[in-house]
Amino acid sequence: MGVSAAALYSKNQRWVCPLWVGLGLGCFSSFILIHYVGGTVYNGIAAVLLLVAALTQEHRFNSNTFITRLGDWSYSTYLSHAIVLGFAYKAYKVLRINAYITLALACITIIGISWISFNKIERPIIRWVKKQDEKNKDQKYSLERH
Image 1 (cartoon, rainbow, N blue to C red):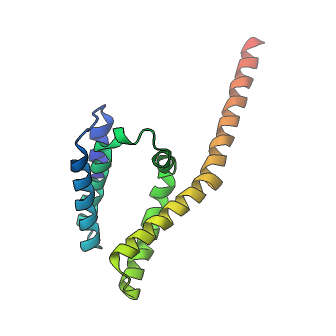
Image 2: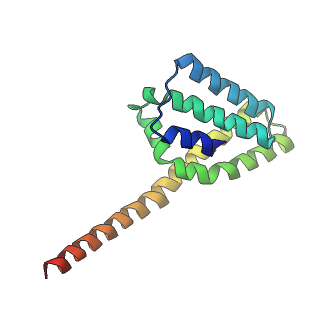
């Protein structure tokens, strides 16, 4: 489902809806996530609705640096979210923690892990690759001149 939404969005189709539509989709998807915890189909539907809610409001976040940073950390978020949510679900079941508190703690943990991963792993690798690319371009240029 998410891949389909991404494919539709990537075809230069920008989804713009009133703010209340985006907020409504976001709230509805959160309701599904909280009240139907553990159901793969429900979680998938909720995730797609949350994605669509965010995409319909994208134009509002262009100047927000926190949102931009979350975008930078998105690959790290993708890698860590399933693990953190798995632990959060177990904590929710075993420790009987309130679902809202569990979800809030899971989101904070995911953001923290994403920040650390991006700054300590991804960013250094990106810089190294760019340096290597520049070296290769310089080498290629010097070989072409001779």
